[in-house]
Image 1 (tube, one colour):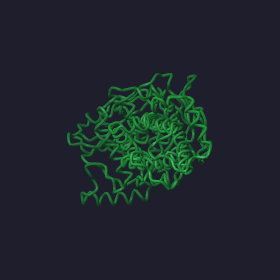
Image 2 (image 1 turned 45 degrees about the vertical axis):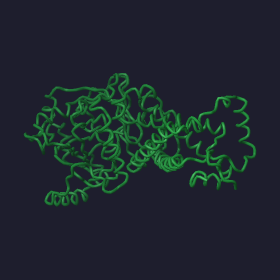
Image 3 (image 1 turned 30 degrees about the vertical axis):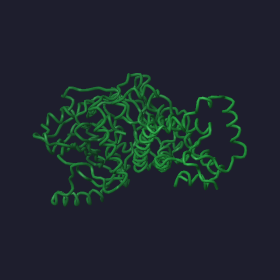
Length: 247
Length: 252
């Protein structure tokens, strides 16, 4: 086991924010799944509920296709009058702690994320380690690096010295997926969209924002799986040492 | 729009006795919503403080067109006067509500009391006597669904001003016929779109949606919009009914 050279070590603040993000991400994924179980239907546009068609539904709780509704009625006798129905089914709902845990963890993630961005900009971390170097903007290098991931990975990687594919992936997670989940999350808040109605415009409505939130979270979970696989394949012990004690 | 109905008959008696004790000891009212040493409630408190500190005042929520009105599920209590639910442990049955319903709500009165100069009881006709506000808004349920409807009613601030709300007032508490209770702060209480709604989609408010009058708090999640209103109590301090397990502030 070779020690990492000083200039490719993970800096202390990188290690700290990595684990804060890890803890908050697990809490967000866990509570987010619970929240999804309560209403496992996703829609496109401004509105969506049990009486309107869904984009798709997920069989992940007893609320899936529960069908516990009294007779559907129109609000008035005029044609095209909107529908209403009373629910007669006791749904699964643990959103009391689910929602509060989700937002508590979101605070940790957002504060850590802002800290990371500021530290990353002012320390040069983002420019030097995440942003691909000029000579790395090459399709040939990219495909070479991509293919190498399916071959045998050298046992010790370089700590904070990231590969090309690794750089693109981390950039996508940090600058695209995480901000997207935060922004679409805020778009589901009635107080925040009252103050910033443009959020409803850019995400094509509150239910679209919820659906985008779902897909972005799914991609983040996929990233987590691949990330852990790569950590194991490139030397779990060494990588854990690099991200904890920094050696 | 699901929230635990934390007042069953037994709980009501216990809560009544403890709140009586609380009033005697003056230990049950607080300046701000308590966190009970619970980490989740501390997160809720942070969200509330951040919204109040960072969001600009009383921004109006988006109002929609007639053509945007959607189907609207009725959840939670859908008829507090339904005798079939008399034995239901979760949904509080109200014989008083059943009587009012059979009398077309002619005898219904909304009590307004607490820190107001002129406490009183408002009939449906009294409320309709104030200038009305109609708004087509989006209802967001904590469960994840939402719906758009047209609401007609009187702005809450009109009623609070008519009752002579005192300058020391900090919270408005709403009591419903199904035993449900919620409170909001003055910023939301005086928000122009916070209304006591008696009309929905051009009709009288239907029973499943809270007849004869429900609250609409458009800047918060659906469970703040209390149905089947019975009594409004204005207080200087936060009335603590214990940790229900749900966030008090639900602007998010």
